[in-house]
Image 1 (tube, rainbow, N blue to C red):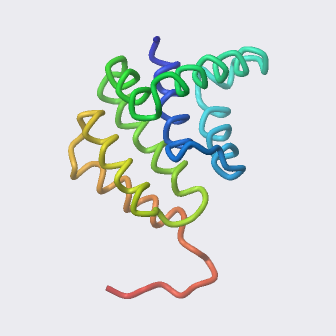
Image 2 (image 1 turned 60 degrees about the vertical axis):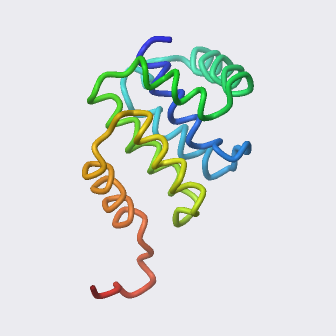
Image 3 (image 1 turned 45 degrees about the vertical axis):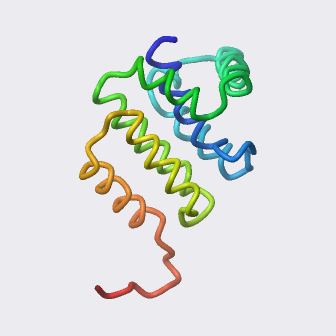
Length: 139
């Protein structure tokens, strides 16, 4: 598995952690990859082939197994970015559920990320995905 495939693997595993690909999660996955090099330069056929390969890996290994394999390929910066993308994808359909939080905690451990850094990522996701229709909560 090369680094771009590993990066996409983390994103796919995040979006399908519960065994289902929701419409919101699928859109978030597509968005997360479409504008990012090297994926933005790939044809639809190449992206379909990549996703087919990753889906086979997901079925064979499960989301945790796929994340673990991908983590072994990525460098520090790629692991940090992959975590941020996974967090954004998981937030695509609303606030994090307890199980999603656990998956992100496990992912951070698998990716060997500093808890302080992952906490910052989650804080940014709270701001990014905050409702614009509800008043801010004071601390």
